[in-house]
Each structure stands twice: as structure tokens, then as C-alpha cells.
Amino acid sequence: MGIIEKIKEIEAEMARTQKNKATEYHLGQLKAKIAKLRTQLLEPPKGSSGAGEGFEVTKFGHGRVALIGFPSVGKSTLLTMLTGTHSEAASYEFTTLTCIPGIIHYNDTKIQLLDLPGIIEGASEGKGRGRQVIAVAKSADLVLMVLDASKSEGHRQILTRELEAVGLRLNKRPPQIYFKKKKTGGISFNSTLPLTHVDEKLCYQILHEYKIHNAEVLFREDATVDDLIDVIEGNRKYMKCVYVYNKIDVIGIDDVDRLARQPNSIVISCNLKLNLDRLLARMWEEMGLVRIYTKPQGQQPDFSDPVVLSSGRGGCNVEDFCNHIHRSLVKDVKYVLVWGTSARHYPQHCGLSHTLQDEDVVQIVKKKEKEDGGRGRFKSHSNTPARISDREKKAPLKT
Ligand SMILES: Nc1nc2c(ncn2[C@@H]2O[C@H](COP(=O)(O)OP(=O)(O)OP(=O)(O)O)[C@@H](O)[C@H]2O)c(=O)[nH]1
Ligand SMILES: [Mg+2]
View (cartoon, rainbow, N blue to C red):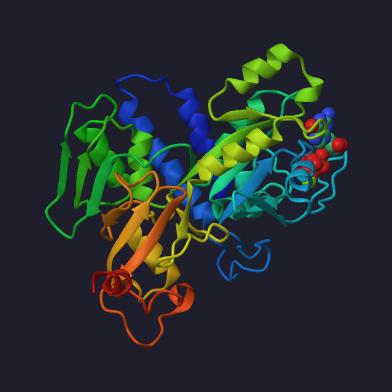
């Protein structure tokens, strides 16, 4: 029996089983079994390198956004509208057969937008080119799930389920469960608050299913069995997703209003160019990009070319900012001067741990200025530290 059949069988058994206190443990065990099988399904088949059949494109720009959706919902039309890169659009299904990248220029940053083939129900099990599409989606910073506003609303759930089946978690944060495998000592189960979904016995059973007999588990929130399985599996990807309802030109205003009020949703029409600017703004906001402008000593900040950091990927404190410019910069930094929303007063003297916010202006003050002329973008001011040049300027006036 293949893995997919095994999953189907267990799902059928779960559907047959009544949900109550007595069957809770059994259901938990079945869930763990399915999770294990799904993980197996994701592993590349033995003997193949796993490469070659996908359609990965090179990363470009400050962030990557993937367009995911059923066929003919208007993904290619949207790419063409937002990026100017032409992607074939037509009224028949599966027009797009590979991954087509385009670039959005927005707020001084470049965002790579990927048009992908349509996926269908069963994509997670390899139907169509579903697996490859989802693999590309996993590499993105944000997923735009494009939906046809005039079609069934069930599509949203079907696609979300497909993505969840391959370990993507949309608009969720990782469960607050501490889990660590040990070599000896049995299983220690603790929680910082009363639990309503999981008890010690259920946790033991799930761990047993994974053949884990020594571990430390600490629940920091009232998490579910699914959360526990996610933590044990450890390969989940937590991603942001915006649900984009396209083609609102063909539905009534009441429906538009209802769709617009769904969580994490936005309504647009590519044909009438409705709400595309809001979509861009929303996309930008969800990506959590932070633009930092550098200010050379004694000069105006350079507002044309920001350093772009991502609050999601890696964080954006002063240290990240310095590392972004040059790996060796951090050890030379004495402090930085910050102007902008993250500063309490202007300019604020900050250390490496200070968290920067979008559109901050930063001036780096180095510990000991070297005579080598500095490196890269700080070349212009690295020879003239603030205090010396100030003193030099003031000196003639005093005497
Ligand atoms: N009425 C209406 N039609 C649209 C809109 N946007 C796109 N379409 C039409 O929908 C059809 C499918 O568009 P595509 O952009 O090819 O859709 P796709 O999602 O890329 O499809 P696949 O590549 O097959 O997955 C085309 O005939 C478009 O003209 C819209 O806002 N309103
Ligand atoms: Mg297309």
C-alpha cells in the first residue's frame, strides 16, 4: 500500500470515530500517524537527487511573494499588472506551466513576485505540479492566495488545507511548547497553566508514536494535539498569507463587502484595476520590511538607497544593520546615532541591540578611526569622526 492510501485509510478511520473523552487518545495517535506519513511523503524519492524537476528561480530583491491559487483565477493577469513583466493569461485553465518571476518597485525596495501554475485539490499529494508549486511557495516571505470572487468560497479552505498538509502554517505563530529530546530520564511533562486539550497521558502516547521515550515537554499555552505534533515534527513553516479575491467586477456589492471582511483578505479586480494600490500597501505591510537610511558624518542622509532589513527574517536591530553592510563592521562600532520613530529623542545614542524601525536614519560612530579610508559606503566619512571634526571647526573661533 502506498503512503497516500495509508493516509486516506487513517483519515477514513478518523471520520468514523466519534469524538469524545474515550476516543481522544486514539484520535491523537491517528493524527500523529498521519503527520508522520505526510513527512515521509515530502521526502524526495530514494535514488533521485530531488533536483531537476522543480522550477525554482533565483532569489532577487528584498523579499519574495508567491501567487498561489486554482487555475484561471487571474494570477498571471495580476503579475502583469503589478510588475509589467508579461505572463501569458488566457481564459482556459493551466495557462501558466512554470514559475515566472517579476519585480515590483515599491517604497524604494524591490520585491520579487512569482507567478505559478494553478494548483488543484490533491496538490499536496502530487496531483498536477502541486508539490513543485508548494515548494516554491515555501521559499517565499509571503503567500498571496488568489481566489476567484465569483467561485465557491470553499476554495479558500481547500487550498489552505493543501498547504497545511505539506507543513505550511498560514498566519499562525509557532505553538508555545518547549520540547527537547533527551538521552535518558524518561518523559517530563509540565505546563505553566491549566490545559484543556492535552493531558499527560495523551502527550505520552503521541511521543510513544514517535518512539520518543526521553524528553522534556513544557506547555506555555493551552495548545492542542496538532500543535504538539507540529512541535515534535519540527519542520513546519510559519508564513504570512493574504487572501486576494480577484474579479470583484463580476459580483454584487454585497458579496464584495462580505469577502472584504473575511480575515486577512483583500478584494481586487485586475480588469478594472480596482484596489491594486491597497494590495501593494498591504503586501508591503505584511512583509515587515524595514528601510534604514544611512547618514554619513556631517552630510545629509542618503534617501535614495536604503539598507533594507526584514523584521521577520533575522530581525532588524543595529547589529543586523551593521552586518548587512559588512560582516566586520560590528566590532568597530562605538555607538550609533538614530533619528526616526524608534528614537526617543533626536538623535538617540544607541547600542547594537537597539531595534530599528522603518525609515530610521542611522549614523555609525566607530571606535577608533583607521587610516585605511574605511570600507564601502562609509568611505566618505570614516576618516573624520564626529568629535574631532567638531573640535577642529570650533577651535579657530575660540582662539
Ligand atoms: N472578470 C474578470 N476577469 C479577469 C480578471 N482578472 C483576470 N481575469 C480573466 O481570468 C482569466 C484567467 O486569467 P489568468 O491570469 O490566465 O489566470 P491564472 O490564474 O494565471 O491561470 P493559470 O495560469 O491557468 O493557473 C483570463 O481570461 C483573464 O482575462 C478580473 O479582475 N475580472
Ligand atoms: Mg497563469
